Image (cartoon, rainbow over all chains, first blue to last red; front, side, top):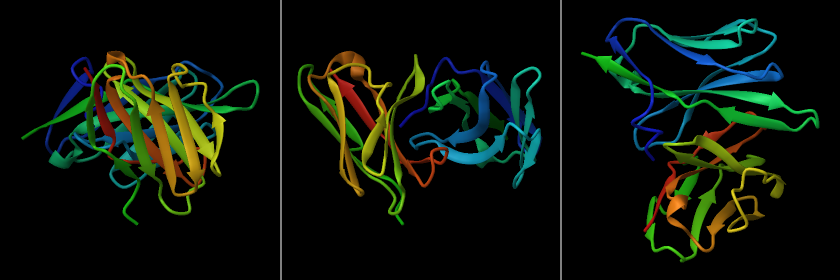
Length: 115
Length: 112
């Protein structure tokens, strides 16, 4: 399945450089955040998550930073490789007043790796 | 495990026809989610099940859409009658918790 497509913001990065993908969220009640990667023809794939009581979490070549003051989330990919070309989505878990959780996905950013 | 399995991968149908999308979740996962992805609206949660029970269907666009999960290893999403604006990629995902979702490959639906 193709991802959102033509109207996505695109980030072009040289192979080997670091990539930073940003995401703004609007709901201060969001308590959990997830980054997904979607390659062409595939479903979204979990990359890394972070809870609202943290401001940084590291994985293998990826780091997520959370700034609750300005409601901003970023995904840093170190030493970008051709296989990192994909659309990246941030998702937030919003806890409503009825204590129902809702996962809301952002529109996505396309990462394009230059050779 | 083969992951979440969806069928068909592609479906082209005429307006007014019934469409049934199928999903086999990962064994042992208690949660099953149906999502729709379009250019305009991005990825939207339609409905999710916990232990085969529908929990939240507030994302289902209208009564033409229905979903069932008769057992832990199978779910369907049905559109009847289908309309061109239903054209999208439909994803099924499963997880052991609410915040965990392993996605299938998706079904690309085209209604002409």
